[in-house]
Length: 197
Ligand SMILES: [Fe+2]
Ligand SMILES: [Fe+2]
Image (cartoon, rainbow, N blue to C red; front, side, top):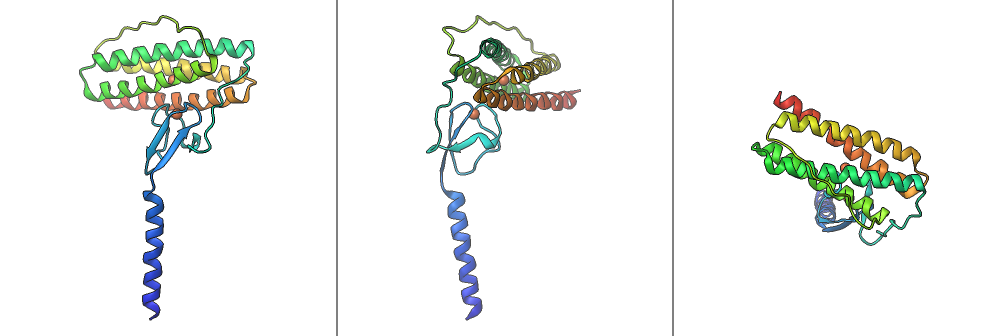
């Protein structure tokens, strides 16, 4: 009799846990505002790449982008938007030019993430227009990876400075979150360079 109740309790417990895992979640990113619908919480935002901790229940999400900016933060956001648009254009160029499928896929992904970063900065800065940006690239994987490494290093350095200039809590959070994704991109560049050399 005891084993019967014991096994029933275990089966019931598994059913409850599985039901919890199977529930479809509606999550929203506090940094980019995009929505993820799925059964498992991803390790990073699938759109802007920030860490899982920024993904919140759609029920509690709110727009936090109405920020009163200091002059230095406005200037830094103009520069940040320029960096992100330039990286978006360069990565898109490589994804469309490379004959290596893995490199093309990597840069397609990077381009989408950087475009999302540009959108984040645009939502806070609310500029009247974007700067004109055009980038060139070649079908040389190593050159593209090294160029990406330079771009990510430049972005990370700039966000470190912008973060220390910022006094607005929202902006501090956004610069810190996005800077972390650029560090991930830099790590990916280094990994890919090691792989192809
Ligand atoms: Fe996001
Ligand atoms: Fe970025």
